[in-house]
Length: 173
Image (cartoon, rainbow, N blue to C red; front, side, top):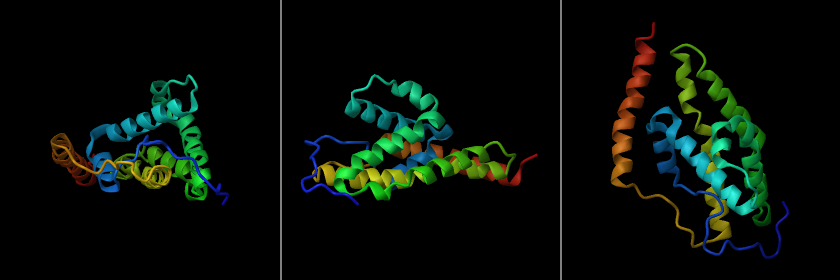
C-alpha cells in the first residue's frame, strides 16, 4: 500500500459518483431493466472522462460495458492509490462476477432470476467510491436522501420486481 504523505484534495468536487449504499441497492433492484445500474455506470464514465481529459464517449461506453467496465474500474483503482485504497477494489473479481450474473439472464426461468442481481458486484464498487470521495474530500455530500420520485420508483419498480420474481419462480412454462 503506497500512500503519499499529502494526498491530493478534490477541491469540493466528487471524483466518482458516491451514492448511499441503501439508496444504491434499492434503486438498482427497483428500476426495471437495469436502468439505475446503467445510469450509474454512465455517470461514472462521465466523471472519468472529465478527470482524464480524454475524448471518450460515455454514451458509447455504457452501451458496450463489457468492453469498457474493466478500464473504468482500473481508473477508479488508480484514483485511490494516493489515498491507500487501491487494494480495496478487486477489479478482476468484480468484472468476472458481473459477467457471470449477466450470463445467468440467458438461462430459462427460474434460473434467470439470478441475473436480475447483476448489480451486486457494483455494491462493492460503490462502497469503494464512497471511501474514495470521503478520503479526497471529507466534506463531500453523499447522495443518501430519497426524493418523492425515488419513493415512487421504489414502490412501483419494487412491485414489478417482486411480481417478476414470483411469476418466474412459480409460473414459468
